[in-house]
Amino acid sequence: MKSYLFKDLNAATLPEIAVVRYEPMQAGVWEELAQKELGERDRLALGLLVDKLLNYKTVRANEATLWARAIYPLLVLAEREDVRAFSLVSLAATFDDVEIHGEVDGVLASSVDDQVDLPFLVVVEAKRGISGTDPVAQLVGAMLCTARLNEQGGHPAQEIYGCYTVADLWTFLRGKLDWSGPKPVMTLLSSREYTEKTEAPTILAILESVVGKVPSVR
Image (tube, rainbow, N blue to C red; front, side, top):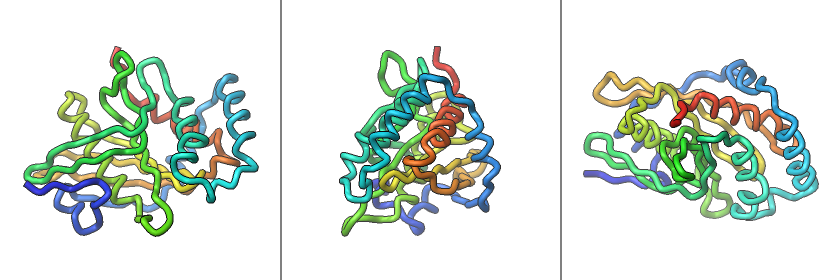
């Protein structure tokens, strides 16, 4: 059996796992998700978060600092009672004779007793500098793995979400799944880039809309 780490996936190896197709940009899809009205507590928390971030040089900070200062706090704000944000989550799934596995920087997942149950949105923080690689293939692999885990967990996913971040920039992906063929088909739709310093409310509204699609585990 072949085995790939998420970080080793690329345009040549992804077709061994699934048929991956890309849709043209559709701004309206993300604008609709961003229309969710935020509550007063969310707006207050965002104000404090952005105030600390606005004059911070995000491109100079290392990934761990940016994760703690900018990315994870937004994921936490998107939680609901039975959906939690988690960091450094290991995932693994098998597709016929190919296994994919690895660790993602974060997830929003259904949760029982504050343990990861089934992830629905996965987050990959792009590596920068000399070791930097394109995060898209890694993220798509993690999304496929997450979709498979949901299927095996009795919740066949018709769509799954992911996001990759670079400094304080967020780019979302929506994957629509078709499990009827010999290989799963994932059709991907990408958002534009969102800058947390100036568009934190939009990012949070998208995250909360995605969480709203997660089936309740209670």
